[in-house]
Length: 48
Image 1 (cartoon, rainbow, N blue to C red):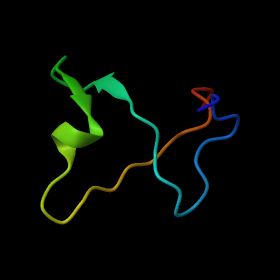
Image 2: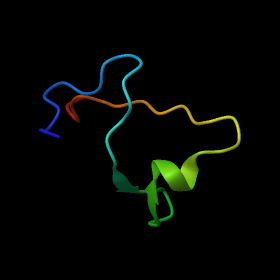
Image 3: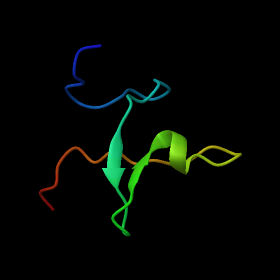
């Protein structure tokens, strides 16, 4: 799968990712997903 230029489209499956949480633990979608799913916001830039 080529890198996503602008992020996933609505309804598209998200790519595998890992990121540190606020406690410094490595998380992925699989580790944060609950029985009803998860709400994830992809931010296109870190320039606030």
